[in-house]
Length: 352
Ligand code: UD1
Image 1 (cartoon, protein in one colour):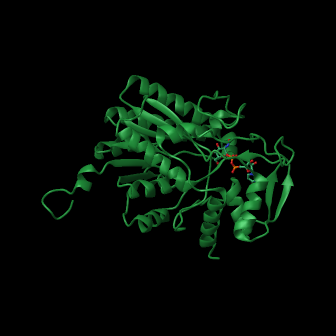
Image 2 (tube, rainbow, N blue to C red):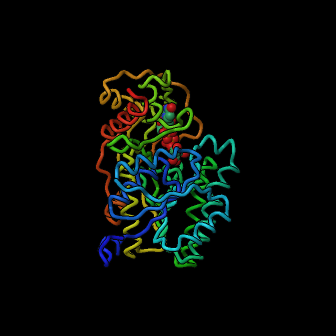
Image 3 (tube, rainbow, N blue to C red):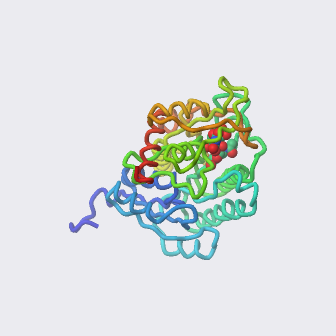
């Protein structure tokens, strides 16, 4: 509160958003975007796949330390306690979840417990405390192998290939079911492939152990942390034989969340539950990503072609019309800009 007897307009209008998993990769960039848009942010994170240092990075970028509590959403009693003491939450963005496809095949129960139980506990608290604005981190994985490209939100949801993908499908269904019978209004954002880092290089992606995703593997190889990149297959039915994805800058993705929050808070959601694709609308092959990276970094990347990775879809990229028209959001960064920010971040992390 300002020194002045009356609160400032900003204080009166400042909405409080709870961000679960707010110290993770997409979560941290979204916290920055929310704070820059004038929201007050409260972060919950169990630090299972990130570091407390991310809080410092967010604070340096925005000059505002977000509130933070270390909490594991699988512990129902802790979740209840949290909501008993924080009654002024205007909306929730729920990122906290496990996200490694391979790990989910090895340990499905971890995924069902972490991704589903936590969601159910959160939704129970939404009901108990009349929190009606909810944004969910979904994924293009819900589409499986598309029949038509670019893929739009009307495309059928196919049987999930991994328990991870299944948790995203089930979560969307749970949220939709709850919206039908309560005051909950929700938006699921179906992310395509998020890459890159904040321009300040104060926050970015910090994979624990060997990266599973393409771009951190590329930047770690260029930085000398990994010996060589394996490209999983060059015999797909695509122009250069490698798989095609829609790589979206994480800062663009973060801004889609701010648009979604605004839409819910201003009661502009035309249905109780809406889904939006969040991608660039452009597909790039793995080999194109490697070439683009070599161009922006000026480094020759050490790579070899190996056999296909089980479970990979051949090609997927977004039809973004719905997000453009209804959410009023559009990605502004291209592939090279995204890769340049990822490389800047990697160099900062490695001190090179
Ligand atoms: C997968 C999931 C996505 C999830 C994301 C989170 C599917 C279909 N997609 O994305 O929903 O949000 O993981 O982690 O389940 N590649 C290589 N070498 C590597 C790594 C990747 O060639 O070392 C290739 C892959 O074969 C793929 C592309 O790069 O063609 C992108 O892979 P990745 O970054 O792992 O993302 P997805 O598998 O698309």
